[in-house]
Image (cartoon, rainbow over all chains, first blue to last red; front, side, top):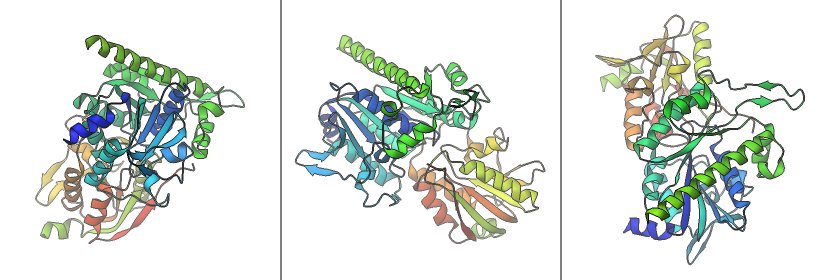
Length: 278
Length: 161
């Protein structure tokens, strides 16, 4: 009966993309936010961004929605809208103060994630993007389990070039395989830094073991792209602005846009294949 | 139990390294702190309770080590130049380094309790506990399990943004 409830609610969602990593601090939320903005640039598309990082929800701040609260209506919880076609949900909106710690064990976190999927009135959605916390635990198992009520197009896995990140990301790739979650591809963030003054490139996080490129080759997973470090990315995030809109000429923007396009193409192709089968 | 009373009884100070945020350098700091304290002549141990993303073994070049049991529990792996820093991490219990530990809270809690009470640390001046990001199962369980002992306090790590 619960599965039927979830299926009914998520029936109006066309594409679902999970943003994962094994590692913290590599840019999952940043990427999720920019993916949402990028997809919502097409005003004919309805985009939903769901933040299931219960302990460290970054999405409200990154989307400029800090202090917003969730409203209830007859048809469920209302997402908080950034644009007419871009709605957001996060535990951040349920806190009375942004510094309140959510100190919950797994089962309680799972309960909230289920509520996010069952009780939020997303409406007709072209893309549901789910931002996750680092790791391979309750949140990840639960989201995959609950979303089996609809279908997940795939996962985008985010990393940075150094081995300490890659070793966690390989685990995440194995997690995806274990739960039969298709992998759309890997994004390598913080991949090099070009000095705006002297234009020299430095490897701030040297890829001592070949970076995401080598890992993707070894594990037969697509590398969607590499995004260089740009201090303006962090600044835009802190200020709740879209880096893509604010800094259209940054090499990082170009990388992000290419990656977003590849994800879109994957989802559309996926959909066409499904329609053929049906 | 007798084991609970003896395994941490010889540890003078326990330090937790925390953040809320991932990727800010908790494991890096834990490692450097351990090495610096060791250099200053202290007896040091590291307990890595990041079950999903254990980074400490690689940072100390012992990612291929295995642990074994003795009468009072698990024997930590000894690391560092003089092999004098005691380390316990779930990294040592994995069959393959890329194996994902896909556990829900209760299973994680059980292992953390074991890590706290069943490792034969011996006499240490400092036990540094490295944690994963967040404020969830691992953190609650670690603090609960350490409460009867000499918990000095927490170091919080962040980055500027």
